[in-house]
Amino acid sequence: MKSRIISILNELKLGVYEKDAELSLSLLAALAGQSILLLGPPGVAKSMVARRLKHAFCDARSFEYLMSRFSTPDEIFGPVSISRLKEADCYERATEGYLPSADVVFLDEIWKAGPAIQNTLLTVINEKTYLNGATQMHLPLKLLIAASNELPTEGEGLEAIFDRFIVRVLSKPISSETAFYEMVKGAKPTEAQQSVTQAFSAEEYQSVQKEIDEVDVPMKVLLAITRIRKELKDVKLPNQDVHREIYVSDRRWKNIVRLLKTSAFLHDRKEVILADLQIAVHCLWSEPDEIVPIGEIVARAIFSEYLDRLAAVQKAVSFGMNVRRVRESLERAHERGDHRDDDLIIFDHFYYGVDEKASPNTYIWVTDFRSMPTHTQNEPAVRGVMYQDPNCLKRKIVRAFTNPDNIGEYGVELTRVNLYRDSSALYINGVRCPMRRGLRGSVLEQASGLEPAGKRGNANPEQYETEVDSLFQEAVMLSNSFKSHLFVSEAVTKLVAGQMDIFKRQIALLRADVRKLVYDE
Image (cartoon, rainbow, N blue to C red; front, side):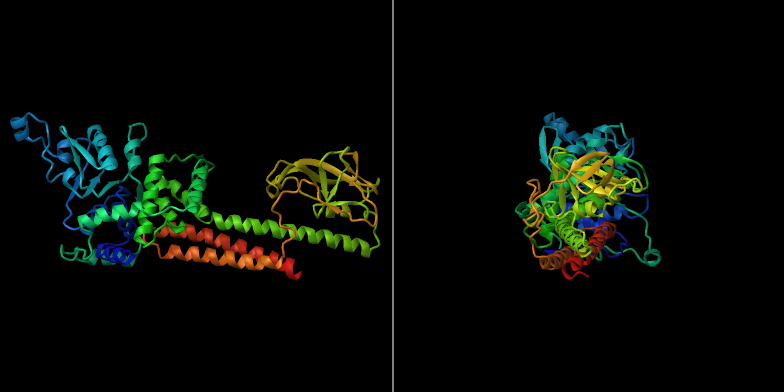
């Protein structure tokens, strides 16, 4: 099927320049039974896309019409049949040669149509039916392409019909001068040149619909969709201090998933993969300024599994680095002959605990406490912060030598505190808090009982190298699957590639930390 689609697209593109996305997404929409909106200025070959798509189907009939505020239902759905009115007293339309008899329909300036036409189109697009008098007609419609050089005006009741156009594409003038020269010099292709050798018959089209129904949508794709839905509730627009909630109806999501399943089938797959999700960028925006942020949201969702795994390894490596810093701090202190804190209990590998009576569930980093000078009149208190551990809200963490203005490092609310110590206690804002101590010579490392699961403190650090390499290879394979995808515009591919570049940089930084942890580089 994939090779057949490639062949069809190559033939459809003959004599058409820089309209790959419009043609490929229109073909996808047709085979999925969906509709498409082309938004762009006049004269950019929007109508040509519709005329070409007709040739993807054997013996297909087309209908096209330029809407105006004066357009009547007769011009779209056919005139009233006088003979039926006389003979049977039935108000029916003679639909032959009009929209109800067409396989591919092109409606230009769609928003200028009157309410009577638009209300009828709601059923035509969604159910592929038309009520002709008392008869419910099942239409042969495979694709309805609408075009406009503007978005529907708010407050005119056009939201319902706008929502029916599942795929939305910005159609622009030719940007390449070479392609422009070829266009202006080239002759118009003949009808024979526009024919498609592997066009779908009516029977094949129905068979494709049934096979698309059998395509599976795995859980990892559904979870990525959930992530997209959540992020669409608060979308920051580029170069603006504006956040917008982008509403996508349940019906629209169902139709988007239908597109994803169609894409999988046309790529010879039995299930949707994450690369198919790129198509959603063409389906979720309502205004052009939303395209880039939505593309970034979809790209993050596609890589979400890998980013989550990367974060888990980063957390484990950071944990190992902190444990190493504690051990090195203790070793340096002993080399200097500093044994004043040898009886302090180390909790969860790198915390000292404050006496529970003085401040319950309060811990300070070992390295911070040991580096803190003993307070005298000549040594002022040091700045620090106190915050709730985001991984264990019962635990309060004290950090010294930290910039309280840099809250991004913690992602939690910080309380500024002044800190100093003496030989036996920590002073928080002048309040003396004795430290929790054990017997010298005994095991002075314990669990606090508050340590969150999953820190992997006992994992072999060398395993991280293997895990990072595996993670990177899987992400590269995912990225390569984008390049061979048939139904995504170059602009969307660039957005996804940008997310891949971010992922590669994060992998490089993580590799450096892993090497430092494993080889002490």
